[in-house]
Length: 231
Ligand code: MN
Image (cartoon, rainbow, N blue to C red; front, side, top):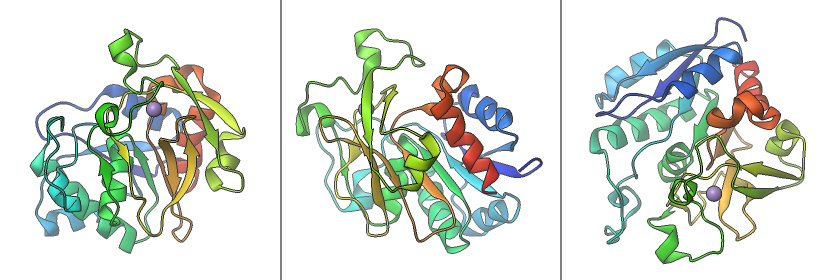
């Protein structure tokens, strides 16, 4: 609720896109950007000062963290960020802190909980759907495919519909879903677009970028509002 602090992760070598900060502010939360410092004591101190965790988008998670060799089409990785975020996620789950994870965030959450990823969707799981809409020249805030929402999930209650349009800016996705996570939405080609962790107080994760569409998309805004309300 108002005044609650949302820690937002970021890359170690580039700035956080402002849309994350704006979406948290618009939902009534207080954003605090967390640098990628891997030291466990520092991570514990971050957690002492935030009420919830927003995992933002970014580079690929290094496949060594889920026991695989790098695929030839693996993208850029950020080892400092991987180390910090995987520790941060595990400690945040131990504390039962609310988590909202976006794009790389859903992937990092799944890896932290023991799942695996497709390292490159176009080559490992060919589809009619262009999950990288920027390659078709579509702006980040434009919808590019729909997703089917799973009945009975918390996510379904939040977004309020069985099928919603989303943007798509990813070349990776969840492969084996970690124990403890439940699929909450899929693209028509079967790619996982949302998961949640029902055993925790509040853990919702999406593969798309609701922070980009929130200004014109009520379902995206409700995801930020439900997260901030859960703090
Ligand atoms: Mn997609």
